[in-house]
Image (cartoon, rainbow, N blue to C red; front, side, top):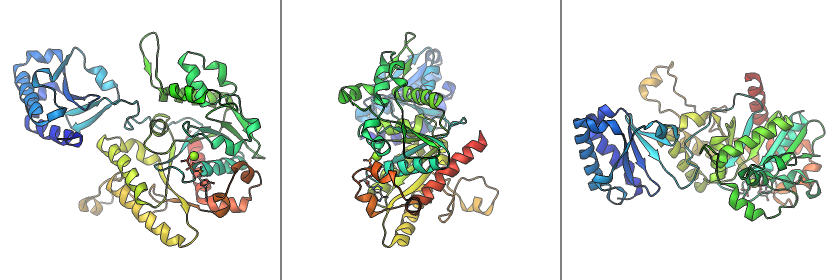
Length: 434
Ligand SMILES: Nc1ncnc2c1ncn2[C@@H]1O[C@H](COP(=O)(O)OP(=O)(O)OP(=O)(O)O)[C@@H](O)[C@H]1O
Ligand SMILES: [Mg+2]
């Protein structure tokens, strides 16, 4: 019996005994910080003899079959006068139609509560990758530059707080603002966010037509950056005891900056990997598009598979899949077409086995079916990679600022064209919809 056996074992137990628990309505199963399992049951249900007997049977089965993940049957039911708040925690997912798991993690990032896409302007576009060092921040900087050339007011936010760097590609060091995202997160803990919020953006000189506002991870002088970073992730709790996780605080900050600077589009540089800060960017900020950078490697696809399977298991997939878009990063100069073809196939295999609806033979015969799925070769599909080419000049860069300040428009389009056009289309679509 190990952690991964918990859910299948519970599914078996509730399939056997669930009928007798029908009087409970939804059955809540709490999986605590250690992975141990108890039931959360309404106090009044104690009165119902049939429910009591069924609870005994279930808790005894749990004790016998869940090994180290069981509580002794006698302690395995938590009686609560009101179970509503557990459902509102947003940390529940379906195990069976009448059984929900209430999950407790040691982190605020559970990856499965997903904020609705923002319906208001400006659109927020997240640059994400499961593995680092694939040219995500560079691609973001180039997109910012190109959107600004088209007259957009772009706001760029560096949320890779643990390895900041994006801002140095857009503003020279002597023009950094005094404060960054980390400063605000720390000041906000003591209700002092307003002391820094006016001095968190710098205007990049890269663009001639529109503008690029840069919000760095830290200010020109990082100060006690490590001491600040060690606190930035904390939640706040107000006088009424209402807890605000840091991702909500971050959302609040970005909203404030949007109000202050009135950008027409916001580009967010998320941290790579299955990381707490990345989770906030993907799931809590109401992102309108999530660009998922990938190179064609086993490591990349198995990483994305872990994430997509989690979304499938917790039922979150339907809330996020329409915003995902794979970006083929660092596409090699030689054998390009074969590389892209292989990548497309791997990407399609992954999406088909996880996020796309399974289409049975029967529903294929019925074209009216509303299944959300795409052909492998459909270039409008989320799995169909937008290509970014590897380029010697970019690989050898010492400073992106130097490179971008005399960027050759033609080269930028040759390397980043599909990404630039794709993001521009997201911005226009969002504008038309709002
Ligand atoms: N199109 C490209 N062709 C060749 N090299 C590139 C390209 N884009 C970026 N690079 C180089 O790859 C390295 C990583 O780039 P970058 O910092 O943009 O990646 P990242 O995905 O943001 O990394 P991290 O995960 O560390 O934030 C840098 O040295 C950069 O100059
Ligand atoms: Mg980066």
